[in-house]
Length: 291
Image 1 (cartoon, rainbow, N blue to C red):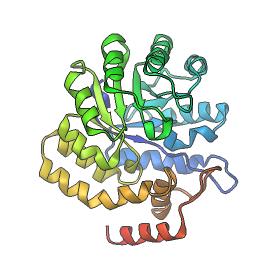
Image 2 (image 1 turned 90 degrees about the horizontal axis):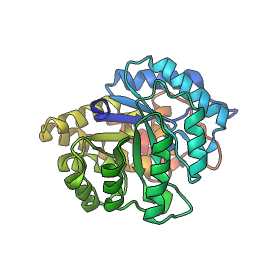
Image 3 (image 1 turned 90 degrees about the vertical axis):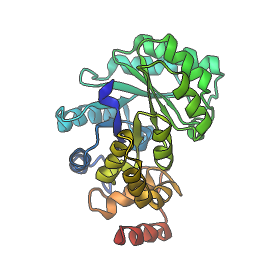
């Protein structure tokens, strides 16, 4: 899993004014982040507005991403849901031959017990043709995966190989890092905390910000992994205010505003997501003029 160290980017899904997928813009974005130095891309993460995509669109996005990435970097595919049986079915149907791994978010809304989360992931892992990356994001799922749950899965299930940890709980993160198997990767899911978590021993980041800040974010992560923290801090503080703006109102509305400002995508969404407010867009504009 060495290929999944460093910077991964959870790609947005660009739309046109009629809410159809903007394939030309997605190709521009893929080339932009790869040219910027990211180590891998994530297709169908929740930053890609996957809850609003049809099953056919998801399949098309996977195939398109493989085609346009053209094996320049690894591709991770997001396949997660609160319906365990549905995740298993999608694992069987999705074209995953070229995928490096599956990123699967913890079941949301239903708020299962820790044992329910464990059995959910064990069932998925048994059905998956690819390694599984756990994804803990309690701010969206409504239930935290404890360090004990993560560590049990890491030690007991051979093809559960990594964790994207986005709880924001630094002590929990350190408990996982301290007791994980040697070859189990832990990556950050919090752009604003990434530098601190890398300093604690995380192996990289699956980033939203790297959609726009591909070069600087990748350089920050690389510097931190090389223990060059003076250089990493300089880059982190250069981007820090932007991290806040990206998540102040909504993700992916924030990152799409940055990408729209740069002319990479249009600023369109599918409901219930809306563009950022005029006030926030002006703040983004001011930030980028001085960046």
